[in-house]
Amino acid sequence: MLTSFDPQNVRSLVNGEALTSGSTQPILSPHDSAEVGRLHLADASTASAAVSAAREAQASWAAVPAVQRGAILHKACNLIEARAEELSRIVACEAGKSLKDARGETAGAILCGRFFAGEGQRMFGRTMPSGTPEKSAMTVRQPCGVAALITAANTPAPNFAWKVFPALVCGNSVVLKPAEETPVSADWMARILIGAGIPPGVLNVVHGLGSEVGPVLASHPGVDVISFTGSTRVGRLIAEQAGRELKKVSLELGGKNAFIVCDDADIDKAVHWASLSAFSNAGQRCASGSRFIVMDNVYDDFVNRFVAKAKSLRLGVEDDCDLGPVINLRQLSAMLAALERAKAEGAEVLCGGQRAETAGLGNGFYLNPTLVTNLPPHSHMAQTELFGPIGIIFRVGSFEEAINLANNSPYGLTGAIHTRSWDRAWTFTQRLSAGIAVVNAGTFGSEPHMPFGGLRNSGNGTREPGTEALDIYTELKDIYLITEPERL
Ligand code: NAD
Image (cartoon, rainbow, N blue to C red; front, side, top):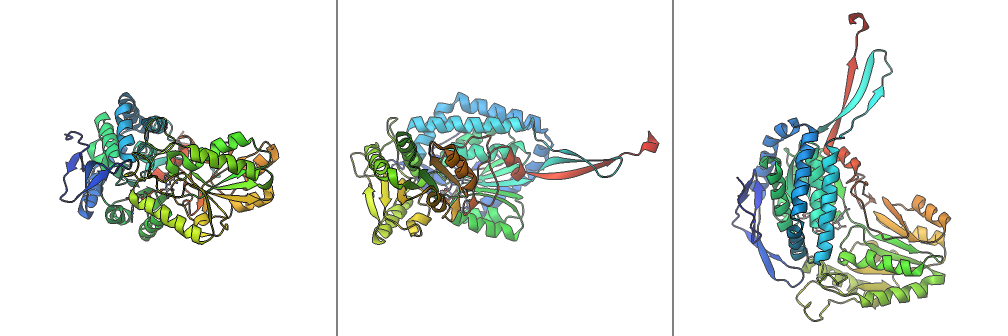
């Protein structure tokens, strides 16, 4: 029997039991640093116990037909929808966003959950002809076993749905390690899923410091597949640890995404989408636009309007605000340090560049929307993801130069172009070295039925969500059937 939800005391859930820990830390509102709850930090032994519980429960969950697993997940989506406002308020509080944005994320999480619940009715394999007479060939999908899922804090509800729903519908049991900053929504959602009929040992949640429980999950012999959303630095560590055990790993990592403005672009639209790409969710999206590559002829016009737009944005967590704080002080300090380094390298800060100190925001982790120029493409800031509201603007003389600069990055997640030319648009989609290419909109905006992922430092080649996520959470098995005509 589950103990009741207590946002003031968020504890790990292992086999349906909430585990109190002697070690706790405050959950801080990024908006004003107020303590909104306490997180009980799991240690290595709790992480191991969660893996054992998941192992124990997995076989009977795998024996439930995928269609029925999907039906339970559909029920969970209905329950989340019925209480969507509650989840949105939790997310708004722990992640420091407006209720309007949190509501949008809750809707996105439900959409993603429903898509994967429906995959229970599809879960396709393939039938293929055999080269041998009287032989049939096909593939079926089987669960991997225990899935360890590690998530980031930027959009906590969709991040949960993006991994937990596909892992479960495929018949895996789960150990989820949510970001330390946003544990309350993960606890709430896990309880809803268990309430909908997911057996307790099938969905376990381990709250703890990533550096402490993460390596346990990444290297545990009882874990069969690891799916991670977070920084490239941690992704590398996980790949190393999991690689030693030859575990299946999916890494959804960072981006330094290019946004090209051509000289034939609709500049009003380009400014609108540039601002959303750089500053919505305080720039805390792997798919944020952070390198703005602008053609000479429209450079002054675009930059003047983009800077004016950035200066006009309202900071805060009310519904009419444009951006909120970043998730924690460490993140804010890292951005301020990167800005100092960029200035030392000759960067010109066109707007922002400092912590927001205006009324009511001084205790929050707010950075004024920042645009920087005069940086060489190989500079630290141009090559490093900052995960905050900072954009760098480059001037280019031609379409060719724009494409080359867009591709000059250790990352390869998304990119956008603004142009009225079909030829430029299509050529961009073909030549951009990234997993996602967008024409005349923002660098972000993935859909749950579409595969998302990137190249180089942005990931390890897997794609989530979409049907492609089934490739992560299932193992394909070939089946050959031989018929014997003489027995007919
Ligand atoms: P982070 O890597 O610091 O943390 C992400 C998660 O990893 C957290 O749950 C954290 O506790 C855990 N973690 C930390 N150290 C660990 C370790 N040694 N072993 C295992 N787990 C560990 O990332 P962050 O700063 O919280 O999140 C921002 C990053 O996430 C950005 O780089 C962003 O681009 C990326 N991101 C990527 C996607 C995508 O789909 N590609 C989506 C959202 C965010």
